[in-house]
Structures are given as structure tokens and as C-alpha cells.
Amino acid sequence: MIFEGLNEKFQNIFAQLKRKGKLNEKDIQEVNREIKMALLEADVNFKVVKQFTKNIGERAIGQEVLSSLTPGQQFIKIVKDEMTTLLGGEIERMDFVQGRQNVYMMVGLQGAGKTTTAAKIANLLKKEKKFKPLLVACDVYRPAAIKQLEILGAELKIDVYSEHDVKDPIGIAKRGLQKSTEEHYDLVIFDTAGRLQIDEALMDELVKIKETINPTEILLTVDGMTGQESVNVANEFNRLLDISGVILTKMDGDTRGGAALSITYTIGKAIKYIGTGEKLTDIELFYPDRMASRILGMGDVLSFIDKAQSMMDDEKAKELEEKFRNQDFDLNDFLDQIKQIESMGSISSLLEMMPGANKKAMKNMDLSGANTKQTEAIILSMTKEERHKPGIINASRRKRIALGSGTKVADVNRLLKGFDQSKKMMKQFSNPNIAKKGRMKLPFM
Figure 1 (cartoon, rainbow, N blue to C red):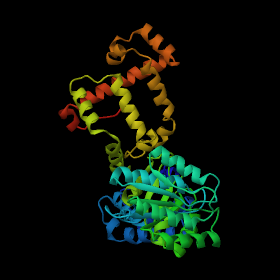
Figure 2 (spheres, rainbow, N blue to C red; figure 1 turned 120 degrees about the horizontal axis):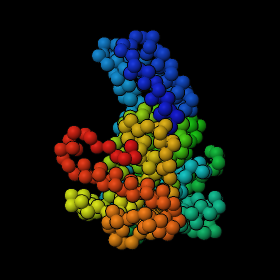
Figure 3 (tube, rainbow, N blue to C red; figure 1 turned 120 degrees about the vertical axis):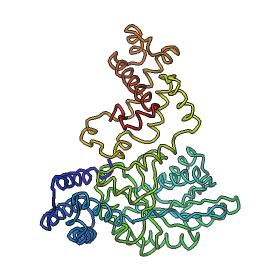
Figure 4 (cartoon, rainbow, N blue to C red; figure 1 turned 180 degrees about the vertical axis):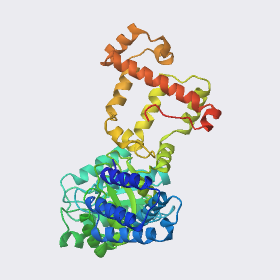
């Protein structure tokens, strides 16, 4: 989960605050010390931590908290506000304009996920903005880098400009840009070479490519698991190239938070996107306020809604609504819904967006994609009539279905029980009187 360790520490700190009826200066100083230790353990840059806790202390010790009727909640609000500011304050979108050529240059160290991120951005903007993208392979040093970009392009149906057995990245960039102009591509993304560490030859090459293509955006790809070391990397790239923004990758791992919480404050450049998984759709806009909420354990319902809306088909949604109203929701529809939820990302990543989600309980839940495969196998082992009318599935049918799907009867029983619970939930959901009373509760929550 994103910032799992930091998230748990903040939730423990806030739980102590909420138990206190009043707060004095000593309480605030003690809580601030705990916040400082939590951030330093998350590998956040010490200068950033010092300024962050100083800002919190100055605001909290003033009348803003001490005179509040709910000092604990007021203090938490201050922490959230300051963290949002630390992460950049306002969302900063990519610089792109319809009807003109948008040129992006991807830079960063080797292993940060630059090539995959280039493909992810091209795919995202192709879908969202209807751009015609071209990927240009300028990494002539890393073995199979060109081939990797070509494979990603083929998978996403995005054109790739490459020159095999040519060791001239500046020339490739120039010819790739020329092709994009001649063939009217309105989005061109240059995947440049990285190194295991910054060296003079790499930076000279990148400066020359920049001068050749005159990019709209220079995007630094940073491994989100590198901690405050990423600040040194970002500083050097920014000094020589004047980057326009940062993309953090591998944010689905056990990320401590050092990179995300240090970069913007230190170099003054916004985080524009974050990579949240290995799928080519696992990239999302970086919202500082939403990320602050997730770090502090407050959930992120808006991102959940955005993800759901981007994945759900409008026609299917209307069709499904009609089935709920007519009580015609069957196991085929149930399987469709499970697949749509899976396409939004891992269940654990979705649950962590829910305010108040029990993180400890989630650790013990089996939230892997294997469950979806098993569910699919069980449902596909049923006859058409059984899928449409699960009520007819008796003991002998359950044995046959388990045998056909390579599962146990207990697995079949569990699936049918889950389906019944979902159906009851949907029946309640379609009842406006019950929905208004706020009695809704998902079975898996």
C-alpha cells in the first residue's frame, strides 16, 4: 500500500489526539516530536521535516488550536493543510494544447521505469485527449531498451520511431521529430537513456537532445522507493535541464514516502503523475490534497470515483441499473462487475482509498487476482440456466461445478453466498428510503 508505514504512524498519533479533551503547548510539542520521528523514519529530507514541523507548531500553538472546541480535530486539519502544501498545494497538469505538436522528453536514472512510463503517458493522453502519439526510442545503450518500447507500442497500438544499430541519440531525436512533423503526430514522447548514477556524459547528451527537440515538457521519472536520495537526483537534473515536472513510479510498493514528501519542496517543481502498478493503465494524476489524505489515513474517495468513472462503460451501467430494478441481476452480471473492479487496480489499492478502512484487517484478506480467476472458473463451469437462476443449484450441481472448475464445494458455496449478499445489497441500494438512511454496507467491508 502507498505509504503504509507512515499511514499507520499518523493514525496512531491522531488516535491519541482524539482522546484528549484539551491540548496544551506541551501536548503539541510532544505530538510534533512524534510526527518528526515518523517522517525521518520514512526517509523524508531532514530540512523538509524541520520546516514542516515548525509550520505545524507555529499554527497549533496559536489560538487556532488551543481555543478550539475540538482541539484534536483542529490539529489534524493543520497537519493535513501543511502536508498538502508540502506536496505542492494545487494540482499542476501537463502542458499540452490541442491542434499543436506537444513534445515531451523523459529523463531519469536507469531502473526508474522511464520507458514504461513514457508508454503509459502516451496511452493515457491518447484516450483522454484523443492525441495521435509517437514514441521515439533514444536509449541506445541499455540492452533491449528499443525492443521494450516497440513491444509496449505494439500492445497499445501506438507508433514507435526507432533506429536499430545506430549509436547517435541526438540524430535519432532529430529524425524522430522530423517524422512526427511530416506525419502530423500531435504528441511526441522521447524516451532518453539513463545511467545507474548521474555522470557528465549522460547530462551532456540530454542537454543536446533538449536543444535539438525544444520540448514542451521535460519530465523527470523518479523511483518512489528511493527516499531522500531522489532529492539529490532531482536537484542535478533540474540544475542542468530545468525540468518541468516529476513523475513518481512504483508507488504501489512499500513506499516510505521520502521522495514524494521531499521533491516538490526542495526543487520547486510539481509531481504531475504517479505510477501505481505494473499495468499500462496504472498511472494517475497527482493531487496533493488527495495524497495528503491518503498518507494521513483519511482515504481518497474522489480518486476512487475518478477511477471508477474512467473504467465503467455508460451503456453497461444503465443496463445494470435496469437489471437491479427488475431483480434480474444474475451470475453473468456478477462476473462482469468483478472484472470491472479488477480493471481498476488491486482490491487492496481500492480499499485504501476508503476513509476508515481497516488496514490491519486488510493485511489478512486474500485480495489477489487469483480470487477473480477462481470465481470466473466456477461461473464458467455452470450451465447457462444455472448462471441465470442460481437458486436451482443444489448439492449435486455444486459437486459437478466444483469438479469442472478444479475447486472445492466450499469455494462454490462461498461464491454463491457472496452473490446473494451482493444481490441483497443492490436491492437495498435501489431503495431510496434505505439509501437515505445511510444503512449501506458492502459485504467485503
